[in-house]
Length: 84
Image (tube, rainbow, N blue to C red):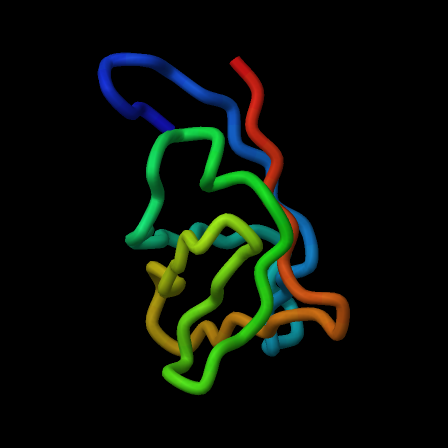
């Protein structure tokens, strides 16, 4: 992720694909309500609007980049870690 001219490594866990035979996939996310890069990190759970929100108030909306791929949130939600 590049934010404010700085490069951040982003690691996500708790997300899978609901389609057999898919070994790799690319997903994109639009993040809103993030005060800074650090507020993007955290544990995300679903909201009534279909977005995911973390404890810092950041929200994100995910989308797969290939047609026919459905992203599935794990039972424990989505965790995002950042490092430089």
